[in-house]
Length: 312
Image (cartoon, rainbow, N blue to C red; front, side, top):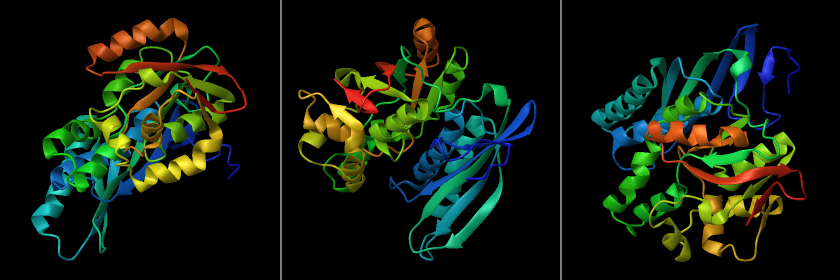
């Protein structure tokens, strides 16, 4: 890792984006993300990919200013589908209050889309995943299980109507959760994406030198996600996450196997995991509800123990 004194946040804490200080009162946040389609509709794909890319900026407590498209296009893709993907992304960037200023495209056998996003922020107001403190309360702003739902939809196990709840959630910006949370104190934050809930929560725990204690029954799930996990409708990414992350988490004996699978499920454009002072939790939950964000209190922070995550 570079020892450049201007680099405030690099990759040593597995944070959501890098932060470079430009002057005392100004820092630049940058992130990039792109992936293959998770839905059939090209406009929805563009929306979800953009929301996912923007999420890293919101997880740092900032708001995006400018973005560049990253687009991989198969030669056989109809031009109107390419246009729809970019229109979906542009619609989310407009909703975010920023602009897309260009980008780059290449020919590729499989379509891929995402954004490279930049934001300007006061370095004294940056969130990180490294600030959780014992006695903090943990809040999750979106349900888990959209990876399982997407897998089921691809296999025609669930209908498009049943998948719609997850699609709408993935296309929802974390802007609204961030805008509500900046009105209170936030000690640490991360967003839940491809590493799954356990993966990103363990990164917060390790970066903060704490243990996160999670109440299993309070974890919000998409309707049907648990039942699909019971049927072993599990994406390969969830199984790989479980294999890698199992040494970091201790599940109580009565935490059911399917629920464990959902907690390892790789998420696309998942919610924010916030660690906030106990004294601020009522205000935070009120602000989130007023912003239309359905959030849940899912646990608290403890002194560092043997495991990064304890699930009861």
